[in-house]
Length: 100
Image (cartoon, rainbow, N blue to C red; front, side, top):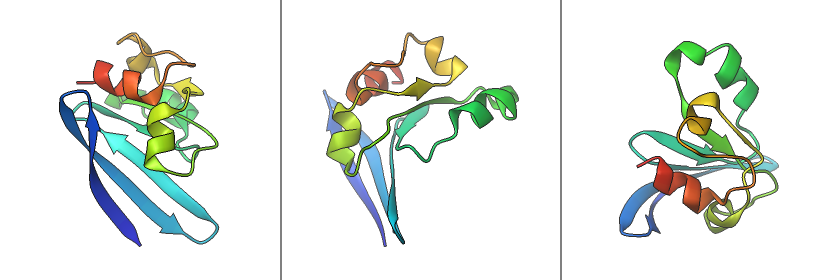
């Protein structure tokens, strides 16, 4: 099942997506410029193989809900996210505000 829901971060309404799969759930919250995602995101792939796309993204691990994704410290970020001041350890919600 796929669920799409509005996610409020500050004064901004973002898009949250939850995809329930066998034995796992994929989670992402996006802005018009970038996104944060659960542990399924391969930041290394984005930085190396897709570097020409300049993707702004960050990953949090061990999260099971969109609320947890917002609150969790980021485990890794893309180079383009770093260029916006997004760093590992930052809360997902703070990273999203920098992606606006």
